[in-house]
Image 1: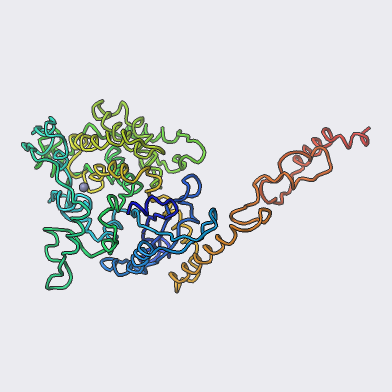
Image 2 (image 1 turned 180 degrees about the vertical axis):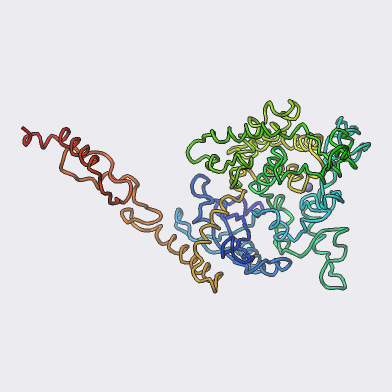
Length: 538
Ligand SMILES: [Zn+2]
């Protein structure tokens, strides 16, 4: 693989997949799954990950489920051919043809699509597609979900004091196990090759016990599969959003809080935190949920929201939070993924300072800083290496504060994000913001609602063709590659001194009927400032 990788003209591609409802959010539940191919060799600033360089190569009508491998088969075939045989391509610099090879680098998707794309179940007791069966989550009977609570002490160094802490984690439990071994790409390949369908013909033998493979994705057919150290990305956008949403809900005690009655009952069974136990209804009608140190009180929440109303960001940095604040319900409505990104990385440390104890605040700041460093435009190997060591410690510190119900598969992914940054590089080329933008464009292409996938395909093919043909237009012809400038000075050809000067119209003019006062002001301005009328005045 190295020989082909060293040739700069060969192309490595990322494959992105996401589901969306082409009929809109309010329509009947239906999703189609476009698959995009993105060349990664392009120069990063302003070219890589632009809409016109993300190519729609496949649309799967409906939820692909376990048939993902079947739908993806043509794409894998093409990738194998492009790798083995290559494609004759013209090199403009040397004016010669050469064989261009293409290889698959990694995939981009949210957590659900991760499972569908790689053929691994991301629910149940083995939801982590990276740890696989090496890490079994615990079942919270009362919460009705699997949790990764107290599963991260084994990733700490063997002499770490947290390993012997019998009070703050699972009560009375000491962890002596070393960190579980992750499967190598060769082992994964061998396991997938050895899968046998059971007698029912639906599942593979040993599913849910020895492995969590639901179907063969086809990725293992790639001749260089065993060399891929980082074949899939845990998308930072969705991970950050889910973590921030859970944390915001818990701190502000909204209906999305993970610290609810069920969580307290589970915690009473698993942990030694008597202050947080549900209080029996003595002298009252209902049980009482004692306040925790990490939840903000009602007046504090009101103060925070009033502060949100005064928040001002730089232009284009974040959406307008002030519009969503509702002081009567103590909520912020309409927060999107990017708002949670800004909240977690910038606002959280300021928001809770002084409201929560210092030790809790420090952990939250560490979490915020962790994500800020991961999402930096440039990352250094030394910083990422130190973050890899920090990740399990940070998770353990969070486990000491929050209840078991807080730790789902998303929170567990914090453990793997820094490894992925080391393998895959800066997060801007691995997260799904660009894909979501393309999905929005595709959404506008749905002309014929009866044959929606065909309509999208036709429109995107047309756009792709027009993109490439207009690249070669002359400079004076306006096109997507050569848009007319916003401020066109050459348009302004007035002969009157007052109207002559730099800058033309910024946009198309609109008609406006002036009031008498406005008309008088304008006339006064023109008559006193226009040198050409001087000779006619008195
Ligand atoms: Zn894991």
